[in-house]
Structures are given as C-alpha cells and as structure tokens.
Image (cartoon, rainbow, N blue to C red; front, top):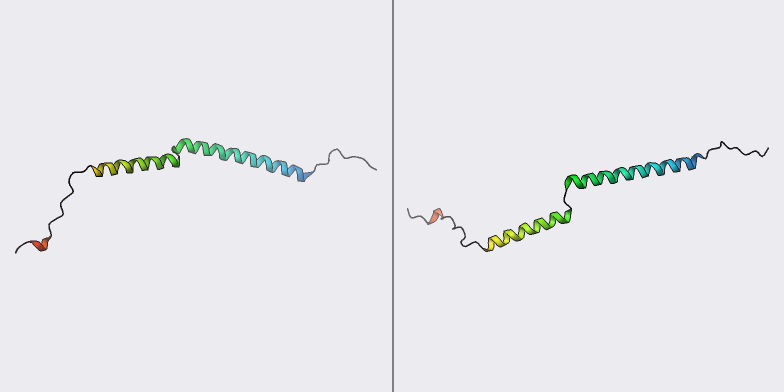
Amino acid sequence: MSEKHPNVVNFSSARKLARAAKQRDERKTRKEQAEANRIRFGRTGAEKKAEREKLKKAERALDEKKLDHPAPLPDSSDKPD
C-alpha cells in the first residue's frame, strides 16, 4: 500500500507561512502609524535643533548690542543713620 495522500497538510510550514504573513501585516501597520505620527507631530530632531541654535544666536546678538546694564541695587548697610 504505497498510496499517496493528497490531503496531508504539513502544519509546520502552514504555521511558518501564517507567522510570516502576520509579521508582514504588523510591519505595515507600524510603518503606517510612523508616517501618521510624522505628519501629526511635524518637525524632525535636526529641524528642532537648528531652530534652537538660531534662537540662541539671535539672543546672543541682542545681548551684545545692549548699551547699558542694570544698576545694582543700593546696599542698605551704606545708608547713613
């Protein structure tokens, strides 16, 4: 009796295929979520860093152009009685 069984299923390979399909779907979902987050939250880290540097530079330039510095408060111990 050397009959071939056409209805035999190798569950091992079926599980591998199912797992691969599930991983592919999860990867696709994560990529879609990442794209949505990029649109939602906007700028990249490099863009944020460049903006901070630009603001610091502008603040330094403004500080350099100040003409007078605030006078110190008079010390109460210097007052005559």
